[in-house]
Image 1 (cartoon, rainbow, N blue to C red):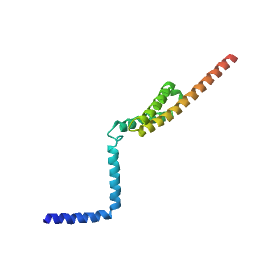
Image 2: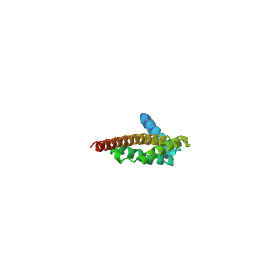
Image 3: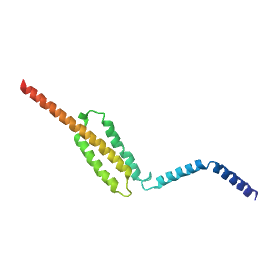
Image 4: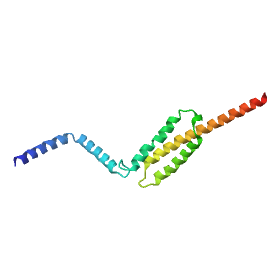
Length: 142
């Protein structure tokens, strides 16, 4: 019986302390609830709907790093294939159930960067073509 009254007193004291700090406690509880909901969601870290896009971000990040390289190093064929790949998988990310917006944003970013790279490659090809034509014209003149 003595233990029970001590436990009730402890609980009462604990409740008084918690009500003093209820804002922090509510914030922590809300944070844990959000984390638990994310962990158990159909696109949470327990599924490939999370890990696939996470690792897929390496493609647009690599393409973004490649924007600092000279356009002569760009492969036009590979860049065009990457544009098609990202367009195709943007549609997949939109149509798959549950809808995977993380994957959609990843492929939209990749599409944007790849189109920029493709435009750099096309401009470089036009530049080199004009340079060769000018060189050929100069050799005819002499």
